[in-house]
Image (tube, rainbow, N blue to C red):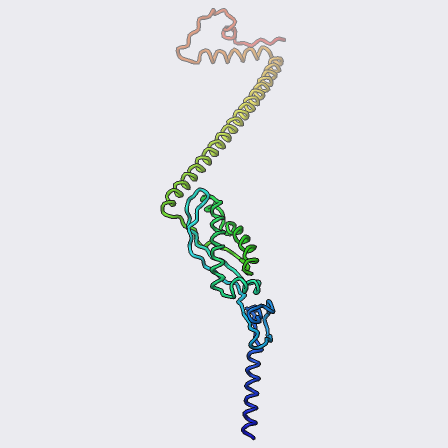
Length: 294
């Protein structure tokens, strides 16, 4: 009796343990789950925590909802002018709709990658195909990938239940047959820009030089005008002084002018004048005394 009772207790505990292990399940914080009954979804998007299911008839599929990385293979794309570029990229994606994800991929991450990769390749091919090589080189890579990221996100949310968070280009290379032509074109562009800058600089220099010359002429004209004005004023003032001095003593003024004339005339050793000795020029030599007009 005791042995049978012990067996029953052990069997009961084993049954309870089996029932608990097959009825209870835990969804981790990084996961979402769906509950299936004979392969058909009966509960969607199960959140993290402890949950219950019916043993045998119900099963649970869990999916990692962390941000995942798909590192794509380097691919060769043609630009708008039919030049090849080799693009190495990667994609950040995340499961956001467990039900749709399970229906599209059966919960297989490898299957999801096989479905995502062709879509990414097609989107990048279209994006690079609408741009020429100069635009691809000049544009920032983040701006270049904005369009494909939005396009893929809208498409794959409905198709696979995943969000495309980011598409990034790691590297863009040129094939050997394209590199030489690209470098030559870049060199030509830089030389053209250099010529334009030189021409603009020369034009600006000529403008500055012409403006400086014009200002110089204006300043010289103003200075010459000022000098003539001052000279005229000086001459007028000198004439006024001479006139005033003359009016004070006309005879002395005449004598002083004659003395200066004698000094200037006989300054050189060989100076010779042919004049009439009785002329007025020798007036003060004949009679040096100055007569007062009183």
